[in-house]
Image 1 (spheres, helix red, strand yellow):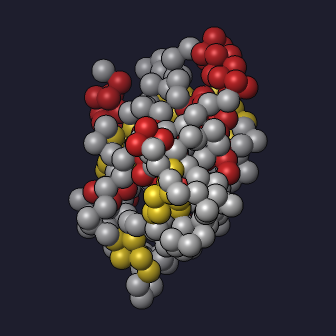
Image 2: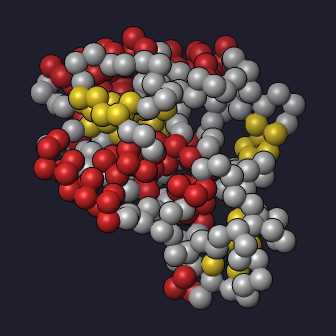
Amino acid sequence: MGYGDEIIATGLAKGMKERGKLAAFGDGLKILWGPWCEEMFANNPNIARPGSEPCNRLQWIEHYKGHRLYNKQGAGKWLWNYDFKPTPGEFFWSPAERSLINYSRSTLGDFIVIEPNVPWQKTIWPNKDWGEERYRHLTHIFQVHGIQVVQFMHRNSRRRLRGVTSLEFHNFRDAVATLSLAKLYIGPEGGMHHAAAAVGIPAVVIMGGFIPPHVVGYDTHINLTGGAEACGSLTECAHCKRAMERISVDEVYKAAMGKLQ
């Protein structure tokens, strides 16, 4: 999952400092940080850094790259741990990030964020894709009703929505800082929906039939599955495609307006 995994980790670490502990993500002997940890854990007082292993305040949590609490790999698919439910994570902003938030607040006004892209670099991307035309149609409806749509542009932005406010970011945290001002997030399951939960933003998450809302969803969000059970297929899946086709533009729009109202 990438960023999302580490945002989940910040939820697992919540309140550690107040209890006199530090969350140590690793195997019980070594703290194991992946490529996104440094950015997602920045300024977080609840999390122990690599090299802190001698500290006697560590509370080990076996949640790290290659070993996640919410799933494990089976034959050609993820096997979901239905006993897991995430706690919304948290971000601790630097002075520069707070300045960005204040600047965005003064310039953007009210807006919603729509993310039409999926992790194109992963084999699972077709199972998480609602389709470009549906995102374009949904965006047009919001625009007709005078609602400002923002799209965050990043290195994975293969799709660009028409007529929206496009904001380009060089790191994920800056995008999340701006997301914290949004009225709503709409898009696929992934890092951005975990970020929305972490900064207290309502969301309509288009999950389809790949991953179960019970395992990675939040009670403050509307999680749409198309009525499908999560299969976890690691390759393109007809079951996931059918699930996405059952999620109509009208259903997403009505769910979004319910959150906005």
